Amino acid sequence: MTFHFQCDLSPALTNAGVSRFLITTIPSTLYIYDEEGTNLTLQAAACCITESLNKLARDGVVIRDRIGEEVCRLRGFVMNFKGDWKYLAQMFNMTKTAQQEEICWKCGATKGTNDPDMCYVNLSPTAPWRAVHGPGWRVRPSFADLASGRICFEDTMIGGDLLHIWHLGVGRDAIGSIVRQLVKERYWPGSNIERRLAFATASLKQWCKHRSMSLTIKRLSKQNLTWGSECFGLVLAPSFVCCLS
Ligand SMILES: [Zn+2]
Image 1 (spheres, helix red, strand yellow):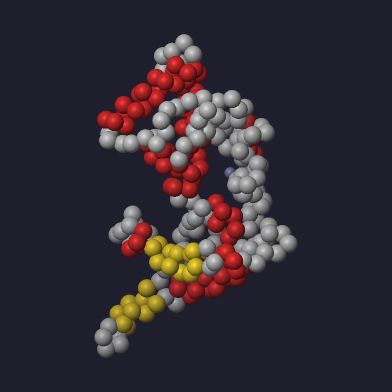
Image 2 (image 1 turned 90 degrees about the horizontal axis):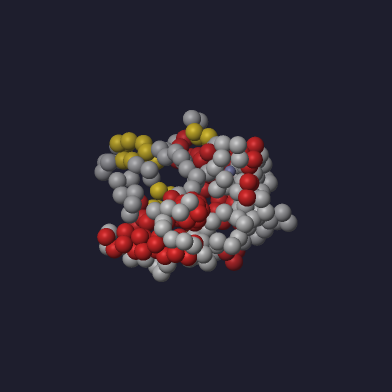
């Protein structure tokens, strides 16, 4: 596990090399778990990191000139915890994770393999997963002790980033569902699904060619749109194809 921080005020946010600063790296061989599956090693590390972050927010770091005079005091405040789902699940001791049918730590949304109505891609205002709330975590995570006067820990600080939330997460499911729906609605011409998908593929290839983009999937097919399954669509392709959408 690698912990690093990134300043939201950095002028080079899109350059990981100059905008991310290492806090620590912990090899997974050092992980110790309790019987409920809480990663005690990472929680202990997070406890020390939280203490440092609280000190940074409370006392700050004094910047001095060459003769030792105080020039200013820099303070830092945590705005957001980012990382992939595996990281967030471990750091916040979540009861629901990507490995389970129920996947959201805040509501009852599922992957939808058992009940499509409960699937998180069911965006209906009356979707039944909206009525289910929590619970968030098994035991209080170390990061929840973040407190620096004005800014204290809130679960809205548990965030995601574009890659993990969209590219690896929702994007492929959304695209798969949309393409399936468009084929059903006969958006592309053709007397059967295969022919309509062939039109969709040709249209996609032309679109990419026009923009000098290369495609890793050769064609849209019933197989890579998981057509036969009862659950919502999913385009079986590398996650970065979602960038095209
Ligand atoms: Zn949710």
